[in-house]
Image (tube, rainbow, N blue to C red; front, side):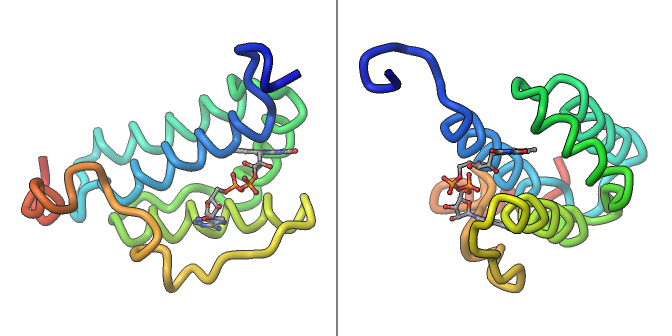
Length: 123
Ligand code: FAD
C-alpha cells in the first residue's frame, strides 16, 4: 500500500504536478519572450503525452485541444492553469476553485519573502 512502499499514487502525483504547474505559472514572466511562450506551450503539450497516468494524459490532451494554453502574460497563464485544473476537478467530482483567488493560493518560489522583487522582474 501507499504507506508501506515508495510507489506514488495517482493522487500524490496529481497534487505534486498541480503544485509544480501553479507555482510555475505564478513565476511565469509578466512579459514573456517568444521563447518563453514557446516553452510554456511545449511544457503543456509534452504533459499531454508524458504525464505518468495514461488515462489522465489522454483526458488532458482533449482538454488542451479544446482550451489552448494562454501564455501571453503571467495573469493569462495563471488563469488558464486554474481553469484547466477546474475542468479536471469537475470531471473527478471535486469542488472547483474560485480563480479570482488563484494569486493568493499560489506564488512563485522566488515571489515571496526573501525573493520579494524577483517576481516583478522578467528573468
Ligand atoms: P488537487 O486537485 O491535486 O489540487 C491540489 C490543491 O490545488 C488543492 O488542494 C487546492 O488547494 C488547489 N486547487 C484546486 N483546484 C485548483 C484550481 N482550479 N486552481 C488552482 N488551485 C487549485 N486524476 C484522475 O483520477 N483522473 C484524471 O484524469 C486526472 N487527470 C489529471 C491531469 C493532470 C494534468 C493533472 C496534473 C492531474 C490529474 N489527475 C487526475 C489528478 C487529480 O487532478 C488530483 O491531483 C488528485 O485527484 C488529487 O486531488 P486533491 O483533491 O488532492 O487536489
